[in-house]
Image (tube, rainbow, N blue to C red; front, side, top):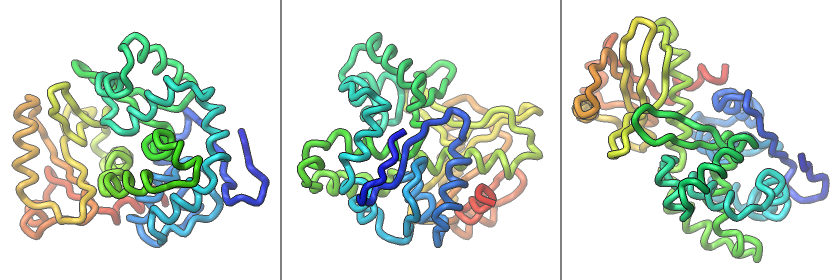
Length: 298
């Protein structure tokens, strides 16, 4: 696709692949940019992942990099995006709705203000073109997610605010980013946690790994079944505070509501765990932190 050779800073290109998994994209991103910390790696991957930018100094503040690499070169990157979407307003509305919601079908159509039949047809095209993936759930709405992290960022913070960006005014983007920055990495963190658990719990012979949700709002970040019919549940906490023992009670309550008899509980946390929770760690309670993500890039 489009590969700019002018003297602007955007040297990237967007190539969609149904074969490359998110964890493979993350590994490539990590090797390309050699981040100083796993936190930097995850947060910058959630914004720039899936596109070749040349070397990025991931230690710099996210918004500084967003302005330099994306907003200042809006018109060049927009050309790539337009090739993928034909510039169709309907597609842009649906993609922005996915980017700014939990991705559940009914929420996406409502946010995009489209009839379900119209939305479903558009979704088919967007999946065929490789922009989004489908996550199915028995007894609940399907979920949609982006094939590349950068596409999620673009349709959350750039496409809906293009008029100001086009005119060189970035205030709206900065304000929206500041409002959502703390939670923006969580979906990527959760999906990469699934890949991490498949690797770290390989002896469990996991047959199914993903999220669990119902249309009434009940959800679990981690839900897995093993070959031996064990059920694993858990949570992913991308926060700046340590996870406390009370998280176990929350998970037990969710499992009860979902009628799930869990054999193992897993918690993946950015900032670690309290002493009380770590003292409970055993074969049926697994606790992982950012340092464990190193196994995804080795």
